[in-house]
Image (cartoon, rainbow, N blue to C red):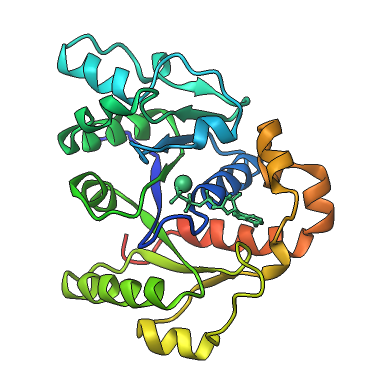
Length: 255
Ligand SMILES: Nc1ncnc2c1ncn2[C@@H]1O[C@H](COP(=O)(O)OP(=O)(O)OP(=O)(O)O)[C@@H](O)[C@H]1O
Ligand SMILES: [Mg+2]
């Protein structure tokens, strides 16, 4: 019997800068509050920002891990992750971006399988490129959150991806419309967004969650959903994020 218990939840998009990393960190905070043991894997290999956003001093990263696996020097996953708090660990993107291309797709399943043995939730922050690494990650995901914005190009590209998903009968993903990143950018109505992407929007992060001084929290290495002030002022938005977090790990669907 295989004793893995972790669920891989990947956070992706069809465009950069839409709020993937912010959502990944916010979800990590929510799962932590649910008492889950969480690993965040930064698979934005060339420009990962998870360790920076969390103010982590990292020694090892995903490149060290694959390098050691390839040399048969792998010990245990714990030796490669950096601890954020008592329930959240991080496997950072390569510190030196020149090593990013060495993290080949053939290692992804192995890394995720190892993570599933030690963690209940594995959040993978991806970039928006549909390459082998990301395809392998999607294949190994229990569920994925696709972040879109109120932007025509973004929506058109999402439609293309949704039609690929339907061709391959992939249904384990949620569409998350992020209105909190660009307040005031709401030219396209929700009705039209659905028409453009030819699919439903599963969750909306409201423009009320726009946090003007977000950089202050980033500089402190804070996770917004774990911050008391944010919880007090944005309680409705946090409640909504909790719903998304729950739906991503829901049993049943087709997983
Ligand atoms: N709720 C919010 N309020 C204010 N600013 C936000 C909010 N969410 C995200 N941002 C800002 O938007 C920018 C992009 O967010 P983020 O880095 O999460 O996106 P991304 O999709 O991971 O980007 P990339 O493709 O570069 O990895 C960041 O500067 C972030 O601080
Ligand atoms: Mg990012």
